[in-house]
Image 1 (cartoon, one colour):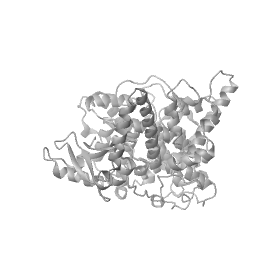
Image 2: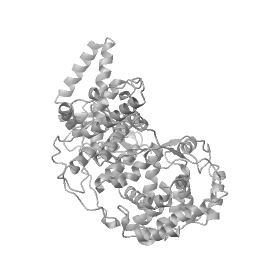
Image 3: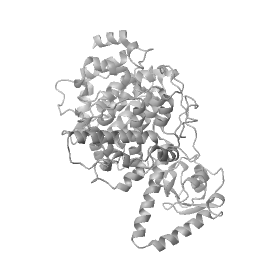
Image 4: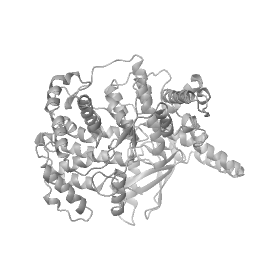
Length: 585
């Protein structure tokens, strides 16, 4: 291990985007602590085994995950759903899909399989006709004008990231290597959108599934523009512990916790460990860096396994550095890595992208792709790390320090360390520390759903609604539908409703079940909530305990940003209902 540190001191400058201004000593010390804490008498269990997909298998799995299995297997899913998704794709997204369909076709031909694979030319329209739709769905001008001229610290969420990257590649200004110092990481600005920013957790499950499919296609297209080939791995299914705290899958932990505390999204043991560390204050020098006493940490873990759910564990006996060591042990003992086996190679490839902005855009898409349990747990950890960094003057733990200490715990999951060489581990060290650093610093940006993806989701929903309308017509209710549609159109065009009149806000879970609100140019969601609090007389309602939702029309449901302008939202989704609900914590 000392040899690794000596090599790091000599060769740091050779590592791409390395932490040049700081030693990686903290990283290697943490790795050494991890090795020392892994005693030979520790409980043995199967380690995750990674499987590299065969030729064509990765592309088939990718198409299936993207909801496009029908492009290589006609027996899967519904063709109309596939076409509604394809109709929303930008040029770069469509090109990414087309490459993978071609690869599957070639592989199947090599294997001489009798398999019906649609011709790619039948799936994608010619560029001339497709380009017009791309401009609408992806909010990207055909010639890319306006994208290249934007500020380097301006994060454009309206235009497809891969389209922006393509414009950059085709001749926009270059830039130097991203700087590494804490105080030199740029502050990226997200312009306020009049219809409101959409955060992870704001959407219902149906729309979130569409977001993840689009995020996968967009992420792949983004890496394609930089000619980066992502090799996704699959975790071979093994038998893991079915109960307990350490070495248990996140899904199993949450099932246990939800039986005790319904609605739990982050493991209770992790929440309690963070609380214990914060109870002692975050000014402690070397917090997270200085390890606890190994024998004591092991004993505490065994005791927690027995007493945590019984509520008899004496938390006051758990010292702060020991608690931090238990927290790190919990993370790295997860059977599957927090960032998932499937997307781990994409996370580690992010720094190959040419600009810091593209790196953050890729991380944004990867966060959206994580399973909810992993994403929610990661967010709680990053928020905790940020609070630790807020006390850096006292605890001496800067952004770089925390990132270097936590990187091996997040990336070097159980079993992975035994599958790579020392040289590979060294090459990955600064990259992993940098990824954790970006996740901590830009977490608020990374948990935002880009507007261009939201626009694509809305368009998909509209296409699906047209299909449903056709199905209903086939059930011989065409006349009634025509009458309803005509009546609805008249109401929407009525100048007394919507733009110049009133909207009705529903609140079925409160005593004041609805109220009429006059629609003005400057009316925001926050104004409606404030008015509701003032008028609710049945039970006192606190402003922070309620949210306004957009329901129906071209979205399933969406919790509104309080700064969203209602008139702009009405124009975007004229058929929506507006509903006040209690905040789901």
